[in-house]
Amino acid sequence: MAIGPVQLIVLGFEHPDFHGEIIAELERLKQSDTVRVIDALAVHKDADGDIEVAHLSNLSKDEAIELGSKVGALIGLGIEGDEGIQAGAEAGAEAAADGISAFSDEDAWDVIEEIPNDSAAALILLEHHWAVPLRDAIGRAGGYRISDGFISPLDLVGIGLVSAEEARELHSVESRPQKA
Image (tube, rainbow, N blue to C red):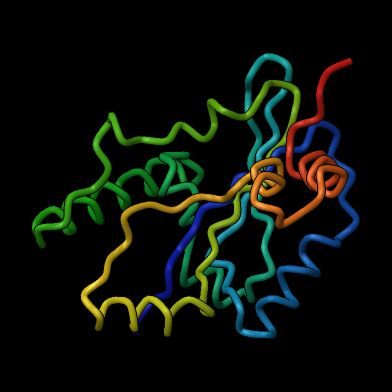
């Protein structure tokens, strides 16, 4: 089975006020075959930096069992305890034996460290189904990914894609609220 491009999105919440709207939108994207949620975790970090983790997903029970905690394994979060750490180590050793190098310490992204104390985050591992034909066409043409990233709405004003007012509104939705 070919897998589409996979992205880890980390969304911060200072004072989470969940009503099921995020899960509903992920479900809509799944139903339209735009994306597949491989895994999703909710992480709460208290004022002392201690964390609590819960699965947050629209996966079916069978999908959840099949996939396990992929986000936890990806970022080194020992959700599955010693068994999870052992399974991750074995998978990494198998990949290395097959000539695939995993992240080095200098390439590592310390997602948990980036979550501010006394806040929460949703970590969503998405497979982009929509991008599979494009990625494959690029590969057939000899192309490859050099880099990627989201562009701030504030940067879109300079190229005339949005007005300054629209950019401020979008930026306020996407950015961490400023402390008063």
